[in-house]
Image (tube, rainbow, N blue to C red; front, side, top):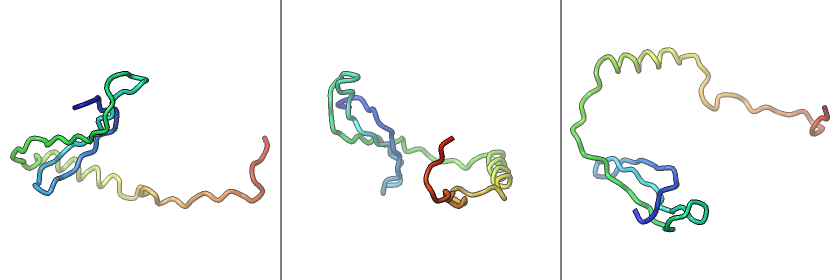
Length: 90
C-alpha cells in the first residue's frame, strides 16, 4: 500500500464470486507521520473450496436463534416523547 490504512475495512462479494476486503490507504498525516495517500485498496481473499459447517455448529446456531425468539427486535421500540416545556432544572 502507498500509505498506512487508518480506516475501517469493508468486505464485499465480487461479481466473480470471490470475497474482497477494501480499505482506504490514507496514511498517518501530521499526527502519526508517514506518507499521505488517497488510494482505495482491495484485496481478494483466497479462493478455497467451501465445506459445509459441522452439524454441531448448525445446532448451536439454531439453538441461539430459538433463544432469541420473543426478544425485542432492533428498532422495535417507540421513540421517547419528551414533555412540552423544554429542559428541567434539577
